Image (cartoon, rainbow, N blue to C red; front, side, top):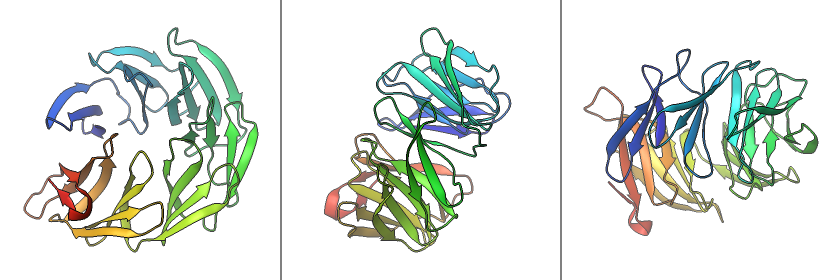
Length: 276
C-alpha cells in the first residue's frame, strides 16, 4: 500500500506483516497527488507540482527527476504494453517518456486545460478527460477522439476503470454510475445513500463502500445486490482500499477512542462478513 503523509513523503506499508517499509523521500513542493507503478513493480513515479520523481521500489532511491516544460501534473501512468511513462499536465500536454533513457519521446497538446485525467488500459492506452459541457471525451495518447460519455450531472468524482479498459465508474451525489467506455452508455446505477469512500476489487466483481454512519457495504457488481452491511467501530472512515488479490480491505479512519488517524486491515470472508 502506498499513501502520502506529512513531510511530503510517500509512505509504504506491507499489508501482510503490518510493517512500514522505508519512506520514499524527494518531493519538496507538494505531497504527491498522483502515483503510478511500473508493470514490473520495480519503479514508482509520483507528481511534485511541475515535475515527476521516479523511485526504485526496492531500494527507495530516486532514479530520475523529470521536469522540463511540465505545468502541474494532472495524471501519470506506466503503459502496460510498452515501457513508457505517460504524463498529462494542466495545460493539456500529453508527454511520453522512455523509462530506460528517460528521454521525452513525444508531446501532444490537447488544446484544453485539464484538472484531472483518467488512464484507460486499452492497447497502447487511452485517456478520459475532464468534463466538457457535461461530456467526458475519450482520446488516444495522440489526442485523437475515440468516444465520449455524457453525464447527467457535473457533480461527480472518478472512481475506477476496469482492468480490461471497458468500463468506467464514477461517484455522483445519489450513488455510483458505471459506463461502457467504448459506447458511452450507462450500464449500471447503484443507489448508495451518504456514500463517503469506495473501493473495487481488481476483477470488478465486488464494490466496498462506506457511508456517513460509518457502515461498510459489500455490493455484488455483477447484479447490484447488497451482500453485507456492517457497522464499524470507528468515528470516521477517511478512505478505503482493496489489496491486488481482492482478499483484504484497508480502512483509513479515526477510532472512537483515538485522536490521530490509523489504518485497519480487514479480510473478506464471504457471507460471514469482515474480520480484522
